[in-house]
Image 1 (cartoon, rainbow, N blue to C red):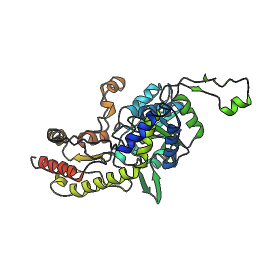
Image 2 (image 1 turned 90 degrees about the vertical axis):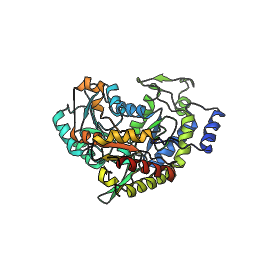
Image 3 (image 1 turned 60 degrees about the horizontal axis):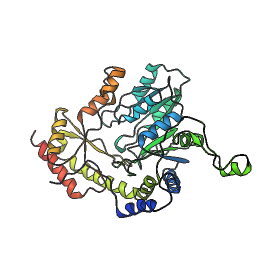
Image 4 (image 1 turned 45 degrees about the horizontal axis):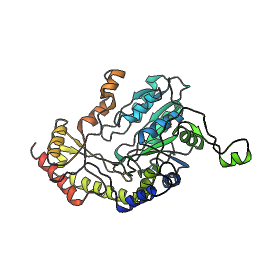
Length: 393
């Protein structure tokens, strides 16, 4: 019995050839393909700059650090995300606080955010951050979040690791994920299960040139070299010269990764179209009996990019049973996510915490397979086995 993963990359022969060309070239680490990838990302997303890095966690860490997060800073985020969204704040010396989510979508709840900021009574000097996550491919309510955050002196960074290509129409306006229209920056991931696969990799998007320059500096040890213009005008500066002006990290993306990412970006529309088609088929099927008796599905939304397709079991007791039943039949599914505050590390740090919206979402959520290369027949098998499970209840 062939296993159906909950997600999988789509690599074709042209992807392989793109990487092979780099292996045969003079540039393997950072080179012209990285620059081309950054420029293509910025153009696609409509931002002034894109800075490509080694992975999504590096993108988070660099964006927080470049905005000045440090001891005394507070970062507020959702517990329904991968741990790195919060971990990168701790790596900067900042404090982490969690606010609640919408129990049906898993998105950060603006009302809870406002309450959390009020309760925190932070030092206005900061800098302080709010990091909403556009979870599963659905855009977080960035307008509301930005208004609340800015009025309290917080900067906003969108964790868009799930939402490349996402948009929504709200109040007559089209808002796009990672476009940085209401945020200081946005962060992407190019892990194989994401919309684009670069093996690993990530990027920070921003419309702030100074912020982009600082992120570029920090991703390469804090070392900078004079430009050719500077060396030409100052003969006393030798061509080999470089200097470390800040303490950074080795978070560079290679040309190998950039070549794969660039080629995948060319097919992003194809990937998005297939994800949306599969999601539409799921929505249509799951609205019928017996699915509708036992499941809720977060409502469809135009522009949702469906990194994940999440179902909610009406009875939390059925979630783990469904997981076990499907996995035993070769259908991989996953829970996204164990709330971060439940991890032992965070319980030691903060003590026991439970937020009602996050708990309601976590206790019932299950991500079922959806990925661009998934066939209609594979999707039918998922639905067939899910129906068989529900008929056992």
